[in-house]
Image 1 (cartoon, protein in one colour):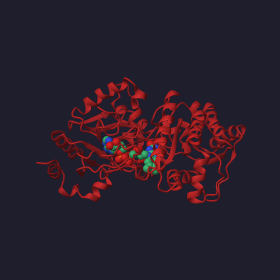
Image 2 (cartoon, helix red, strand yellow):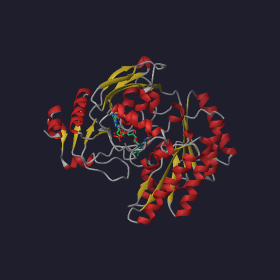
Image 3 (cartoon, protein in one colour):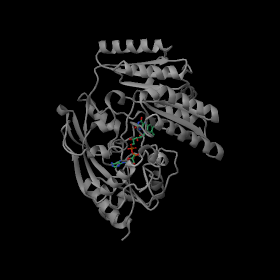
Amino acid sequence: MGIVERLSQIVSPERVSTHPDQLSVVSQDESTLEGVIPRAVVWATSSDEISRIVVACRESKTPLTTRGAGSALEGSTIPLAEGIVLDLSRMTRVLDFWPEDLQVRVEPGIIYDHLNLKLKDEGLFFPPAPGGSGDIATVGGMVSTNASGIYSVKYGATREYVLALEIITGTGEIITLGNRSVKRSSGYNLIDLMAGSEGTLAVISAVTLKLAGLPEGRLQTAYRFDDEISAARAVSEMCRYGLDLAAVEFLDRALVQALNQLKDYGLDEVPCLFLEFHGPQPVLQSNSELAESICNDLGGSKLVLADGQRPWEIRHFATDAVKHRKPGYAIIRNDVAFPISALPEIVAYCHELGNEHGLLIHAFGHVGLGLLHALILADRGDPDQWRRANEVSDMIIKKTLRRGGTISGEHGIGLGHKNLFEMEHGPAVALMRGIKNQFDPDHILNPGKIFDL
Ligand SMILES: Cc1cc2nc3c(=O)[nH]c(=O)nc-3n(C[C@H](O)[C@H](O)[C@H](O)COP(=O)(O)OP(=O)(O)OC[C@H]3O[C@@H](n4cnc5c(N)ncnc54)[C@H](O)[C@@H]3O)c2cc1C
């Protein structure tokens, strides 16, 4: 019996598809990498079904790529042609809720924004909002990429919120990692291995999350600077002063121009910082005063937004604005992270490279975490420009690694950044291969992602 027939026996036949339209949808993620049409897609609705699907794949040596919403940006959700896609987007239930403990247990397919909507009535939230994709990204996908967002400078990334996971390994075994204790010194931390493993170690079938209380008050503000270096220095200074930032986003001049072109915001086309503070009124006041004096010292001044304009709504359109700038061009994306002191140097380096190679580079990101996205626009139809743009992207990554940073602060490695993975991790990659073998001895779970086996 072929794998498609076996899948139809495990779940009901209407939850398995080989229809070209449905295969086309699951062939891609949100990266600019080429999609790959798999043999079939199967929608599971329980841990037991997932386990039986994994066993069927193991016995038939069929690669399996787990999919949440497919919003990943580095090709980690792109399947293999000989493989199947395990789609968990129908597993959206809240399994348990313990508001008094600030904890919730959910199925992996629940969407980030939907979960927060359910938590709101109890005054709670799951903080690591993945900025532009909170309305589609699933909690399982967020754990698998260790997603972070604008509020991670204050509250941390997804990893910091995972208390327990139910996983299904590459042998089909269902195992629970962790428990509901928020502090543990009990053995190896296997949850941390899962966070960021991009579906290569196990399928996550349930997630127990720690939550945070909704802040009493919020204050959003924005500053403009004459140059990118001063804006970057202001962030460094705010961190040095221990300013309690809930969010600090950097937008370079090129991105502000792109946003104006997309939405006609009428923003001053200069580098900006968007800030948010959380807490009671007096705390908001004192934090914003300190931020203002640091920004002023570095030549910055308040950015006046038109009535009704809110910083995060503007920031939400960053990627769309870059895409819109040169229709037909593709985005080569960077997601580097580094010690905060390197921020001015890396921002300057991105702009130097852009000028030197005649490329449009937009730099922005959750800079309080030292995280920067450098989006390079290039024409795939112009092989010379495409090659140069990819080289420039690698140069930015290599510079980051020399400054003690990482290839990926939040999007993962997937297929997009595999080429430089060994450069970052060296002999540790051999240890990672050993761990992969323990979890997935037949290499059926999302093979070929992160590193080669
Ligand atoms: C406009 C836009 C803005 C974005 N902004 C941010 C941002 O600010 N911060 C950020 O971190 N990311 C951001 N992203 C990237 C993306 O939204 C995140 O990586 C998100 O966590 C992916 O969730 P998903 O459900 O779409 O996962 P998918 O794309 O479906 O999967 C991602 C990876 O996880 C694996 N996976 C998914 N579910 C499971 C599971 N249950 N068990 C095991 N493996 C699984 C997949 O195999 C794949 O390797 C953005 C994306 C877009 C399109």
